Image: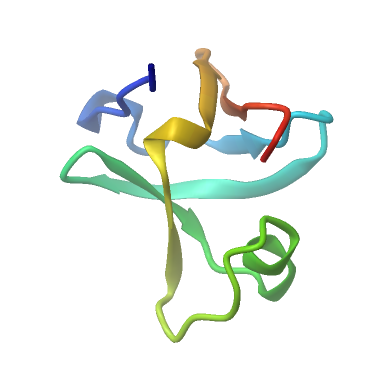
Length: 77
């Protein structure tokens, strides 16, 4: 079961990989999807590949937990 990101999480801040690495910052939440600020290494590290968009959409099934400070991804992401 995936955790749903809501507009309340907009501007939340950090996105943390399952191994604890900081991989980006939530730029905005749109239609229940967090968009991670574009960094050439972020999407490639997550296997998402290059994009022309300014942000990477974060799939809800990748989310393990959401805290007051960060969105934490599952270990496999």
